[in-house]
Image 1 (spheres, rainbow, N blue to C red):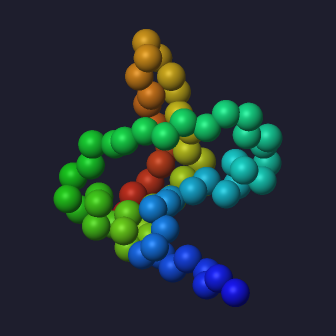
Image 2: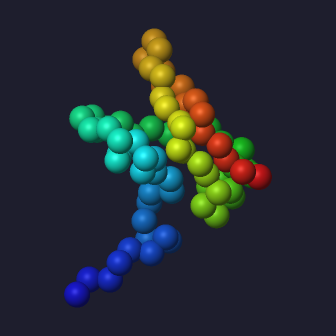
Image 3: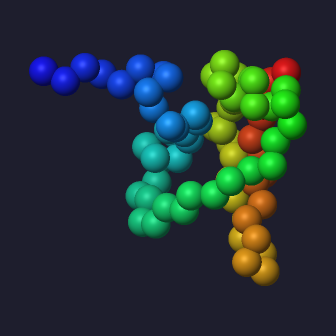
Length: 71
């Protein structure tokens, strides 16, 4: 049997599970963010909230709104 991936093995840091449950996701995009040091540390510690977050596309750029990263 294969073992379950641990948090360190998985490249996924945060996921909006509520959106995946409430909506049918037809298309996904992968993008990078410019983060400060404390934000990286908080994300790795699992202190991110994407429950009410959404992305707005404008002029070929993606803007993240409603995400919360605790210090």
